[in-house]
Image 1 (cartoon, rainbow, N blue to C red):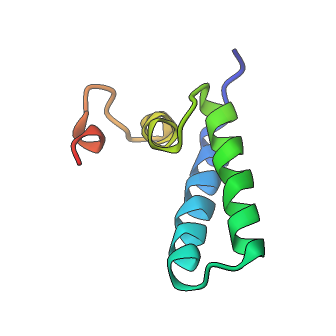
Image 2 (cartoon, rainbow, N blue to C red):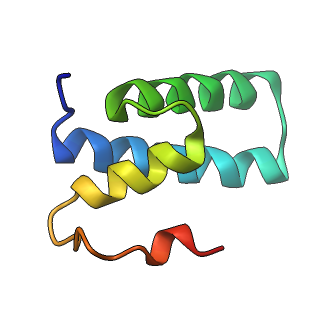
Length: 75
């Protein structure tokens, strides 16, 4: 499986977080569509099937992430 570059993953995470905030405030069709696109891209880029797993996997690929750190898994 090809892995996305950490810079790409960081950008996708930032886009997702921005869109999630916009979705909470102003749930327009465009925001929903963009959020679905970024969610899909994050899942494909990390080899996962849901956004929570994709975010954990992406964050663990970022520079400075500790592979033994599972704090992101605790809700």
